[in-house]
Length: 358
Picture (tube, rainbow, N blue to C red):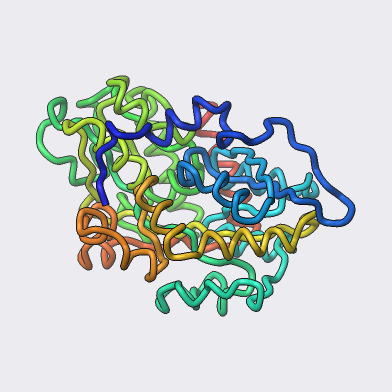
């Protein structure tokens, strides 16, 4: 499938032009608490759905989707921990699925209502964070690495040192604003497992970030790719798909997973406890897992689909792109984040407070 962005807007400009919700959707949430109306309330990452997916779903089912946006998993968790304000489908990452299950925030899925689960590649059907896919279905997966402007940096930034332990690009570096990820990757750069729980080693990771703060322009709220595209930064820690989008718009931008390894992640679709439209939620999840629908979404947002039937419809520029589907060496050097329990989360929160205050 073509990646020619001149023929259609980028997913960022698409959403920006529609008030941060999909075209044709209502902006103000109107939750339906009685019998299921033709409505669905979707809580999603920014710029993380196909260009016409929500309108197409309405055309197919008559169900109108309202989409709100969150910046990171911490915001998603905080929103639901106080009680579901009316969302039907959410998009938590793998470790937050574990955390939300432990907090009793997710509903068990009825697989009989999701027949398109058959399209998911078997390797994604029994993850350690949700055995048997009881509470989630896979949406997209990928890596976190470094996006960079080739003409402004000296070679390929193949180490996390470029972001965490160098003043060479002072003021032109962005890190993610996601506390756990930023601290875990700092720990990995220091030679530990990303999932290290030793407080002393996590403290050392936090201290590294504090030392580096004068060189960091911003902890980016899911917009590091835009800062890179605009020239505000030359190096950014980002999700691979976000960088791939701006690579399609600017050939001077590239992406690398550092030699120390990156973070392997999977985003999922899940139904929170208290969802007002659970049947519509199952119908929406099943629709997303349709082969053609899944291929259209993946082609637009440029993340790796776990949907084998969708991938089979894609061209080689997608299905064989190493920045989308990383080579074995990258996978082997990278790690999947594991939910370590409430004490670990509290420690990360305390360290992040220190980092922000420094």
